[in-house]
Amino acid sequence: MCRLFLIILFLPVTYHLSGQEISPPRFNKFADLSFTLSESQQSIALAYVHNWRLGKKRKIDLGLGIRNTAYFGVKKEFWTAPAELSRGSKAPFTGVFSSQKTENWDTLVVQRAFTNSTNLTANLGYHFSSKWYAGFNIDLIGFTFGQTTSGVFLSNGNTSTEPAAKPAPFNLLLTGDLDLGTLNSEFFIKYQLTPQWAIKGIYQFLFVEYKTTTVEQIAPDGTTNDRFRNKANNFGIGVAYHFKK
Amino acid sequence: MKKLIALLTLITVFISCTKENATPETPVNENVDTTTTMVQVMGSFINGPYGTVSGSAEIRKEFDGDFILALTNMKISNGPDLHVYLSKEVQPVNFIDLGKLKSTVGNQVYAISGSPNFTEYKYALIHCQQYNHLFGSTELK
Image (cartoon, rainbow over all chains, first blue to last red; front, side, top):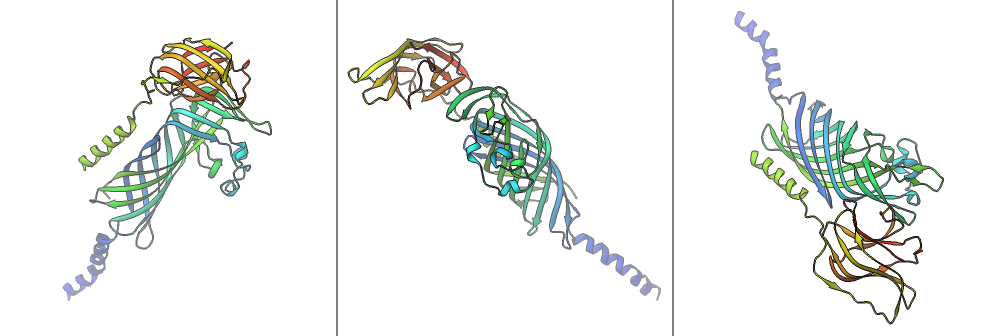
């Protein structure tokens, strides 16, 4: 009788313990290294991510991270950055959908762009299986340093030299052309090779911003502008190392 | 996994080390028809702060009204991304980019679009655009 009592007493405990063994961990912590490229530009990003696994089966990842993105570009075109000029709208979110005002766009051809950005990131992902995972991440806020370089400034049919274009130092996600600075985002699919190591394929959308120091755009309404943005669409690959749960 | 990381690093280094954009050194010999063109302004190149340039430049008006820049007996030290400019200043502050230098040696002709005011754009320059280095200049008069 005593033995039966003990079995009944410990049955829920053993069931709970065995349940813990098969359920996925509550966190997904990893570091990853990404390489992306397209014509005349490349980037390398190193990130640490701490995701919480949500949902009944813990298939959804949501979390924060920190990422350093190094961007290299040769003779890349940067266009008028401020949303009020490039889109004609300063309203948050609507800037993405408002039409482009190309008549306000001037071009700064940055000759040897190099930026190094460190940003806080937001991360979202979904575990399709124990091996396959898809996700999205985006930079939220941070800072940039990088190389001052010359540029060729094209405005209203005139060409001039910008001797010292500099990376914009402050980064902030405000959606669309309202964004400030250099912000990286990735859509990716990841395949788990071992419990620790995974490889991933990446589509990257990267905003890079340079500021002029000598020449300035003078818009048709008379406002001046020194901010110019490159929107890079790159493909790449990466590796991730998952820390022990 | 170490091999994979090493391979990725190698690929990145390889991509980053793209070949410098040097100018061809094969001599070109583009001759101008002096019977159908007329010299407007001309000058002889002198060295800039970077590189060496010798030769002469002429802006010629063609029979149909178009303008060309003819560079004659050019000899230019090689550099990356060399361009030919017509400039308002001896340093390329405000300029018209006539295109990439065709060769470091020989006679070459560059089309000039539109009808710039040659009293404003009175310098011909050989300029390394990528590094913002002036190789040579001439005042056209």
